[in-house]
Image (cartoon, helix red, strand yellow):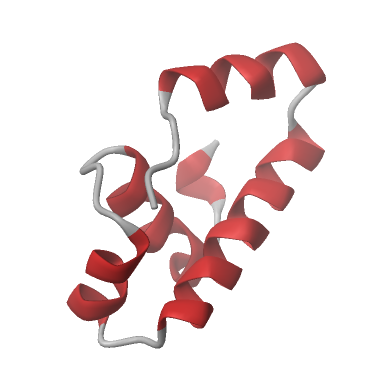
Length: 68
């Protein structure tokens, strides 16, 4: 499901969830403003949430907790 996201959302989400990078670290790595990273992560999760049922989304959130 993550692979279906547009690149601008997929990359920050993977860095956050799979590599456990903090938002500031993602911003530095991608050379983006912190607020842009935060917005892209929010939108990525919003897209995923709309495609998943509630229980599946909660499981995803528990397995890949967000770190700031």
